[in-house]
Image (cartoon, rainbow, N blue to C red; front, side, top):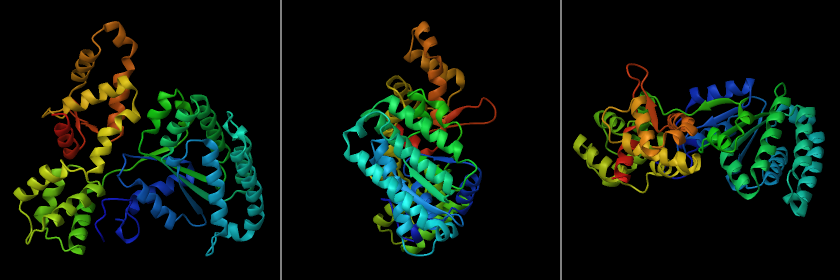
Length: 399
């Protein structure tokens, strides 16, 4: 297993997460799924694993929607990817062997329609994509084609469409997509959408929350402690990095969050330090504070620091930053009353604060959902940072 701190980890370098992937696939048997989690936490690697080992009989289609700022672009690529999968040599799902030829002819007709829309000025008009979308949905429904669409960075796609076109265009495609999922609920095709920008936050900002409430929502969790220790051991052994059991456990205590990217990053720093024997706790502490927390290679924390403006409105982002800036300096976390007092300092006018009363609830919920904060279940139910590394990173960035 090689050390990887750049692109998504695949193949033999992907630490297997069979329990997580099994839960996702089981959910897909019953419904369409949204798979959420912060950037650089392994979602795309899980999609790549499903792409290589799809459910029996299914044909997986993986698309990165972050490059599209129009609905016609998304639909056009989806149709083209279906055709490419049909043309690809190798073992086919039984359905494709029996009905693939007829299906391919329909796909070719739809692709011609899509290409015509792309070339036509009318494609810039509101809902110009609708004929292509309806034709594609009819084909999926009538054929009961066993396609599994893995749509990566769906919330980012919606944000780009809203920016280029309008909120109304996003509303139209979300309503169409919701109706499509409803029509396909008893059919074979399934959609799995992911996002590192909170999907709920994007649609809430646009006032379109009901358009996604039918998804079965799944979140990517960090590795269990036993899995994280095993990954550290494999990385150390396979890359000739001296690291004993005490060192591996201390790394987990320092990070406080068992995301594979952080474990890979820490091992990389140990490797670069060129230790001749297993590093002591003091040496690991120094690496953590001077090279991990302060490193520009720490893309997980970098993204978590900058993505607030993508998930929140201007006033919500101001509140979120103040919450994180304040709570990273607290040894015991915050109670609800302390959060209320913080909000009152930012919005001192009582009448104005009443108008934005739900702002605090939404921001806290989003920060917990997106892995920034963790609320205790007992006692005063205090809320603190969800990981040591995020807390220490925020403390350094706001000092």
